[in-house]
Image (cartoon, rainbow, N blue to C red; front, side, top):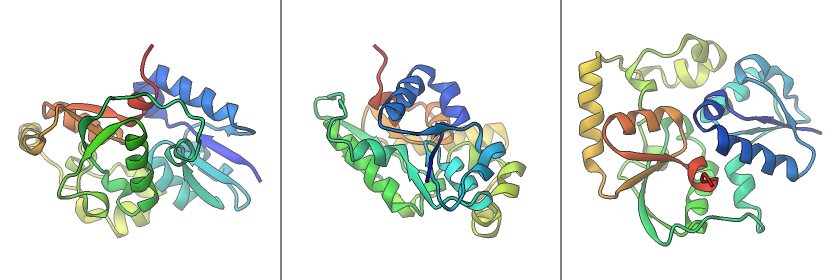
Length: 217
C-alpha cells in the first residue's frame, strides 16, 4: 500500500513557498510518493493506495478517473498531528468560505474548522456553509472546464451541471462585489483557488488556508 501525494498544480503555482514547506512536512511523516498533475496521473492510484490531495478538484478527478482505495486531504493529516507547529493568530475573527467542489465532504469541513481553531482563529460562519454552499467563485461563473467534465462527469455534469452559470465580465464583477458585502470580518479564509480568486476580485482580503498554516518567514 502506497500513499500518493498530489500537490495541486495551481496551489504550487500560487503559493510556492508554502507548498514547498507542505511537501517537506509530508515527506517528514513517512514514505510518500509525490506524483504530478491529477489530469495526467490520476490512474496511478490503485485500490491498495491512498491518494493524498490538497485540491478539491484533484480529489474529484482522482475519485472518478482513478481507482484509489482512499482519498485523504492534507488538512486531515495535519489536523491529526499533535506535533504540528501551529501559528497563533491570537483569536482573530475570520469568515470561512466553504467550496462547492467539496460540499459533499464533511471530513474536509471538519478538518478545516479544527485547523483554524488550533491556529487560535475564531471562525465566523456564513449562512450557506458546509454542504449548503453554492459558491465556487470563478469556476461557476464560466462554462464547465471540458477537462473537468471528461475526468469527473458525475460531479460536474450529471449531478452538478446546473451549477454553472456563464457570465459576462461586467456581470461577474458585480456578482463578486455583491457577494463580498456580506462579510463582517477583515479576512476571509478559503481552501480553493477559484473561491479565493473571486473573493479577491470582490474586494475581500482572502487567504488560502495553506498561507495561514505555512506563513512566509
